[in-house]
Length: 152
Length: 152
Length: 91
Length: 91
Image 1 (spheres, rainbow over the protein chains, first blue to last red):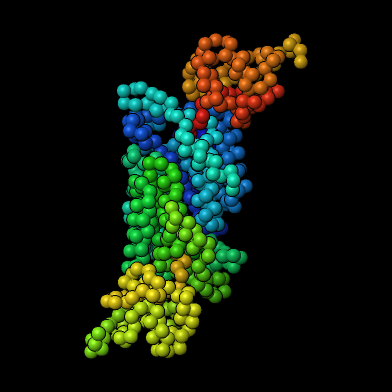
Image 2: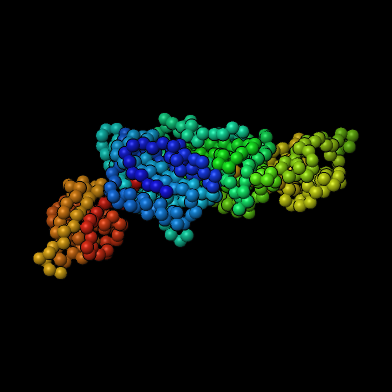
């Protein structure tokens, strides 16, 4: 289990190795990598800046991760979220879940992403090719996605 | 899109790089890695042998992959399944999905695994520490998991 | 159809079906009265006790005709290759 | 509670809330009649037009008390740090 908030890029392979290498009790490993796209609903994106709430971010990510570990039998889990200025193609977020069985790993990864999108204090600002920038609006979809875990 | 059936191990990082590197239209990449565990419901496992149906395996995996691509807008997808004798901790299967949005990538990865588990012609034989071996029985759960995609 | 031109078909067996039958594949000439996969199983069981054992739980054994999953009422028609195997357990 | 001991609290602003208010943080002495987060917003809006603009859509702005998400009826009590921000958009 672990949570990291960092400006630097991450390497998915070495993160997975660090938590699963040499272990023979893990049957399923899921990684979710979120990346900056070059457009947002048709609007071209030159760069994206991620602001966050230092201190609360780490606490909230730890709460979300603990929540996932309480709901599913996970052998390992990891959340890494980047901050600062990023370009299209750059990594933003990594979620890794490992379990004995595939459904736990897949569901926990979906849960972590849904909760991360609706509870972790990050804000994205997009800058277009002419330098104009705007804050990304929260998607209704993300709230809906997160609510599906409440009744389970 | 791609399907590989091979004895050799795979490297998740280089497979993901091959399909996503340099692309700025991908917002979400999901990898699912299935590995050999050292026990199956309390029975210790020394090795696992994967038999398959050459020819049909590739066709079926391609059908499953085409099915996922028809259901979700995927920018890229990949299935690699190993055959032959494997040891605990070894990789068995890799599924990679890439999409503009996270839900498509996550759902498609779950779908691919569910269908792979119930349709791809692979059979696992487990060998215990004393050399005794037995064919793994299909899990009722896997059939149930696959049926959930039929109504959607 | 005339039995002067018996249909030849390749049979493949996998996993414990292969082990019980004792071979991985064979080519057989199908009798005229074998129209469906279920007919084929019925006929195979007359060929020896190893088939009786392999198909003892006939509802468990799955079939593919020309590399496509089928149910037991599927017609064989001009199939080249028919495979029998337990429920799959890959992934 | 006596106003001889005004409660000091650190306020933090993020994203467009920060931009509209024109600063990232400040320390304020809370009036006695500020009991909840909603009370705090009402009071902040009396401090200048920048707060009026930041909280124009008060139902959109979210709050955290001591690094925990809260609703606007949450009591402030002995909070050290209260943050205001738009709905989060990470991930």
